[in-house]
Image (cartoon, rainbow, N blue to C red):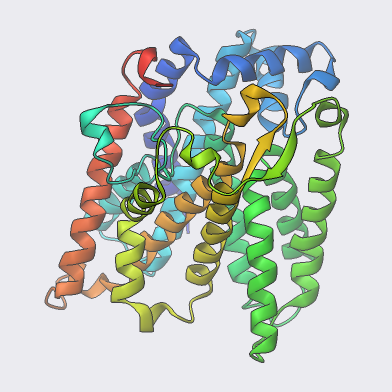
Length: 394
């Protein structure tokens, strides 16, 4: 256990150092960071009505600013960078489970590398080569580095999914587990409500399906630890003065936002496929092995809810809000979690091959090639965000 903790701490530091240049570039060229830095200033001044109700990063940055005497934007960047490290360490812990925690040096390096790559993994988008941009319109890029709240909520998204999966293995409710789940659910909403907006319907739908098929459902654990905290915090967030003072509103306008920049239904379908080649390949190649896996089912359901929101919903009422894409965040977070879960199962299905105890199969080569391609796209995505500010919002 001590060696594991040392390894996770090492991954935490490694990921922070690896993403420090990227966050520094976001700090230099601002992007979405500028608007969130203004929220930090308002929060520090006690002007809470000017702060959106997902203010976890704002409160943390305000505390860091007060303690370290850094600027608001610097404190915000530090909070984001620490969450990069936290998410990387959590991914490493998740992937290590696939290898039964029996990690040789080569496997330790592989897990650390995958943790770094999953934090920047990207669609197989030709746009990355032909027109580099920090925003891939029409695709579902799992890691939009320009947006600080999305980078922060990834940790809480992965943690809540992991706990939900564990909940189905608990024979009875455990007070400590339920309390931890409730805390992480609330923190995920305070980081960015988009994750819960996609995850909660998926969790409820999955549990209802299990009930109908006479499978075990930890009703009290899910209700107290996940559903009720989600409902309460989301209801509070959407009725705060910040949003009540906003003249924008939710509208059901299928494919309107997603086609604002010239995409057709055909190109959107192609971009969806290119966004998820590895998860789709795992879905086909290992359908029988994964069909009863809770993490796999919940990850796909959450992403499905997210893309339904992205394709069907948008904010309306204010011109700038129509182009904000606020209802796409759930799909992007769902894609991130889906890639982590897919990589977990890639390791679990091929552990004997990776250790030299079995011969590589066609399925291994296919899924490995797609993981490599998505990772290469992610490295290019990472490098894109190290360039000048004019590519962030084209």
